[in-house]
Length: 505
Image 1 (tube, helix red, strand yellow):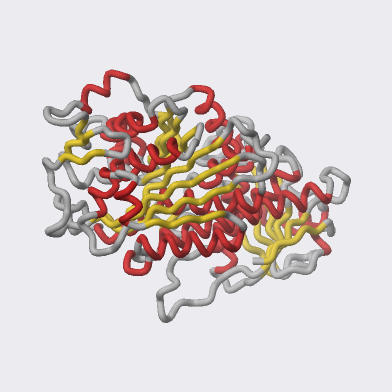
Image 2 (cartoon, rainbow, N blue to C red):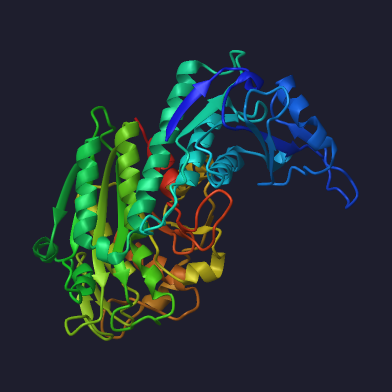
């Protein structure tokens, strides 16, 4: 999708559709009969005049994602005017603007419109932040996961023009840079979504490694990919315990970004869970919904996509991503409940449930990251159903062992506009890790399951500052939303990119 900036007067811009945000500036909640105090977020008198009649009619309420499409609007050179509700002005932010851009794309491409112009709201959001948010939202909204359908309709937006006011409020170079940064992040998010969307027969550990290697060559990253021999040589017994049950060979993928001028005392490690299909192993899952388990490598895909964005944005900080990719299959070779595996760190693990496999491969991934010299660790994984019970499909779970690192990530998360919620890591939960015959068990009681999994991982991050992101409830959109299609979401990538940029020397 092509993106460009324009300082044209919106009413004089020739386009298939001009999109303008409508906000409700009422200060108090309205009663049923009260009319909203609507604001057309465009200073152009021509646009305001074109929308005057429909606004005064009461048809438009300004509610979030409300769409009103006017054909041949009087006084405008645009063929259509799309009024897009943004909700309350008091709470409108870049996060809402990003979603509105996605909603504009999904609304217009459903009508076979191929290009449009989006008038940047002129109050409350800086021009650079607004431009970036619109670009990111538009790319995310343009992605659809149905590309294996033989009768798929070719519905996509080819070009978006962002209209900014011509009054010196934004430096053209700064706005151009913001647009390019938004494009890089959004394309990387869609790259992540594409990896997650692939069915497991088309996204084996080997294929995931090939895709990572190809991407790395395109953007200038170093990439190494290893198989079972290396995993065994590193004594990654927890990782191999999961991998041994599948006929598909596992892959240990290492992506490196080491820019000139990076600080010598900071080396970020990004560890991703890459279970390309999770049957549950011997502790097999119910058949209902198992087809979705192709998404169990979303943490790995997020880290690969994050590395793509980092390579193109070029922050001055050293970053290494470790991806542990495997299937979790039931077979005559598969590990069994009651088995004991020795992790890379030397800790012994009693396998209680083979469906608690993600923490096993992450345990060795975290240990390997520490061996490679990483000073700060972040892992991402579709780890537990328990986090969905706790937080639903709205928030991802955050766990952190280090307060300064958590504050850094929380600031990055706020800037990225992704919903996440911190959960505890109190020492009392560690009691659940105890095993009668090994150092720990890999699964405890059903109560606090997401916390148990995080406590398990904390044993392998040891004294290294560490953050764990459980994205099981948010890596896959269960329904179509106005701004994003049902399917993979690419959650956490934007937060991780902002987090890494925050460390730049």
